[in-house]
Structure formats: C-alpha cells, structure tokens
Amino acid sequence: MRAARKWMGIVLALGLAALQASADSREDIESKSGVALGELRDFAPGVDGLLNKARGVLVFPDIVNMGFGVGGQYGEGVLWVEGQPVAYYASTGGPAELPPGATRSGQVILFMTLDALVAFRNTVGWQVGLNGEVDLVRTAGGNVRLARAEHPVLALSFSDKGIIEGVDLNGSTINRIPR
Image (cartoon, rainbow, N blue to C red):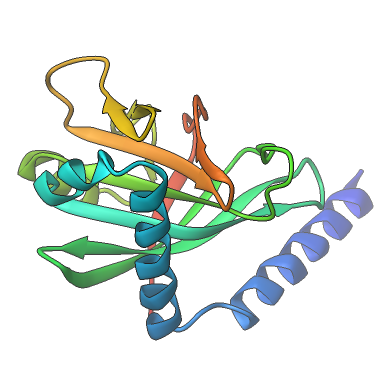
C-alpha cells in the first residue's frame, strides 16, 4: 500500500512538473484569451453584452484533459478587469467530454458584481459551487438565455466547434498562479 502511494505521488509530481515546464507565459495566456473571446463572440454574439457588463472576465482559453489516474482537466487563464490583465489562474476539475469533432475547449467565467469579483480574488482555492454559485449561460441561435434576473457569477464553456451547453463546473477549483 505504501509503495503504491509512493509511486502515485511520484507520477503526480512528474505530471505537475511537466505541466509547469510547459506552462504558458503571460503574453501567451493573454494572446490565447483574446482569441478565445473572439471565438466566443462569433459563436454567440449575444455574449458581447454580458462581457461588456461584467466587472471581471476570467478566461481559460485552453482546457486540457489529463489522462493519468482518474483523469481530470487543467487550464491556465487570465482575469481581465476593465480591459486589463490583473492576475493569472489555474483551473482544475473533473474530466469532461468534448463534442464530436472538437479538438480543444475553454471556459469563461464572468463576475457580474463587484462583490462577486472581490470575493473571488480574496479566496484561495475558490471552488465552483462551494465558494461561489455559478450560473451557466445558455445560448440559442447566438442569443443569450439566463435562468434568473440576478447573476453574480456566470460561466460559459466552448470548444473550437461552438458553445458547449450544460457543462457542470461544480467542484472545479481555481487558484492564482505566479506569472
């Protein structure tokens, strides 16, 4: 049992070291985030109004499915406030399937109120569903459909093929990373 734990720890450490070694620079994350937001606007033009109203926009342009162990997802992103990059974050969560034909996915989390943005920035290990209730944005024909009038935090998932409806982000953990 101890040997198995030791090997699992070594494999996990090597996997995390490989991720860190291949981590994107600030410039790469910002550039990819800009492209991802452009794609998101193309898929659902109605999202533009939400992006303009948001107090903060957290973009994970490239979420990677991890294959070792029980699997999961990992992505690095940037928080934009008033059009400026203010901090960099990593997101981890359970595994998710891509739509047929898709090769990559991304996520955008919108902090619609200043209180929600401040609470996020002041929480280490912010978890979707635990530290903040996140409402998923639904789209239809490029238009946005919201389930309720007040939305402190909204989220969208998308792939290179379009919006991914109904992705469960509960349990995803977001931590600030140095860049």
